[in-house]
Length: 422
Ligand code: BMA
Image (cartoon, rainbow, N blue to C red):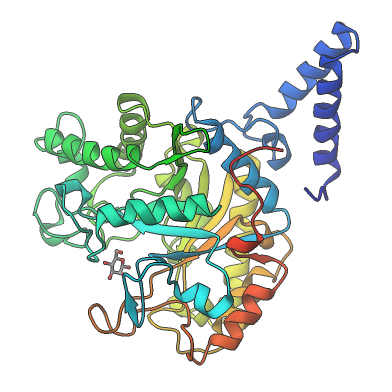
């Protein structure tokens, strides 16, 4: 680890001393150091990022060692680097589907992405394929493959609307769906069965180590995202902020406490901060420090002047600085949980001129742990012109290479072991 911050150094010295104390210095000195280091690592809201490196307060106090290590390593690495992620990377690309080993990112850069995003929509029905036609059995294999190569896994979920039977985007009738599915609501039992199918899937994500022992694969799960907008049934217009927060907490508690899943880091991510008075309103939906490990936001619009902001790059920098500062105050991991040039990459310089320019616009903005761009929808079978990384021969190839070769940006080939703490 490259320790840049004096206070982080202090903690590291304390910990080193604590270890020495274990093996020799008088007990009183050891206890004093231990007390100091515990004080330094308690999850006080004003603690700052330095305190969490040694002993983060995770949403799940029983998180597996690898899950905890993932958090610690994301936190360490983000001091100097940002992991690049891509949704559905191994399942299909713009010109291929379901071909083992392929990846548009690999074919352009020579490395797989550092973060793999996967989508669980329709798992709630026990379906064989997700809403984008990705087979869930194969998805488990791809998740295992990415993890075993050293990558990081993040999961999103666009479940159908349990009231109307339509999709996540079906807001017809403006129903307060959350009220219907929380305890006491008419559809609570249905919703529990949906959560249980989701939990079964996450519980099945396992890997076998060299000794033949199976263990869970750590994942960053990001439910009920973009809630400040109103295009999903869990969106802002359809329930109160208090109901939304209860809903997020209920989801955490069901998977963690009822289902005993200990391989999850929990991510919270509203839609673009451009869209609302984020400094005051981010907290409207925030379920609380005890329910969030990764603080993020999604942004597709700001860099090219969406929401009427002509100074888009500077705005995105401003949002990232705010996110990093807020995350560090709370001992959380900041991340740009979804981004990309919407809807297709027709600005050949977007990656360096917009995204990288925004990130490098301020030293604090650079301390996000990862960013994830959305999927490369297959041209022949799925949506046309709905892709977020170039493929070989695409005009943005050279710019994308320049982006990934920037020392800040890390792909899978750059990663240290994310699942142990050294
Ligand atoms: C959206 C689009 C949709 C897709 C959904 C879930 O942003 O990519 O086509 O169904 O994500 O992956």
